[in-house]
Image 1: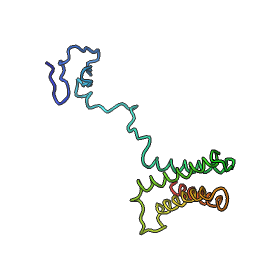
Image 2: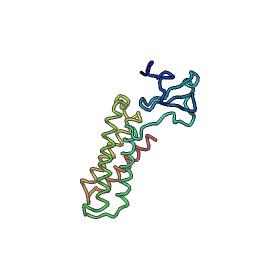
Image 3: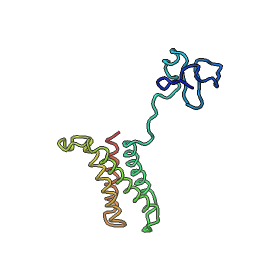
Image 4: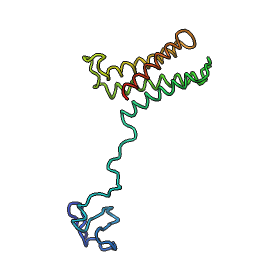
Length: 171
């Protein structure tokens, strides 16, 4: 019978595995690497191993990329040909900008609400960022609502400029 001590197999307990290097033993059933000497058990990990592997998507990166995506979609809406057709690129990019902006506002409220200090007023850059982002998204939706005529371009440009300033404040 095999002997176990604190989750580590003792030497000599696995006769079916014979390795040329006696500094470490590998037991296939337990999937456990066992150090044979105390010096090899206390060595530092290899230098080529990554020290820390971060997440690809975090709350901050989601908020940031939704805001940047909103600006990109608004830029494409401005540059695309204008038509009253709802399947046209101007219409599609404008709606994408508005919904990505709404997503940026929603994630900002969800993840950064504690950063807002109403007692600081507009002197606080976090408050300025939130107000400009909300104004930018509101401008996108107002431009969509008043399209194709009227104050549509004005609302769109106010939304675009406000969103750009909100993003610029964070960088």
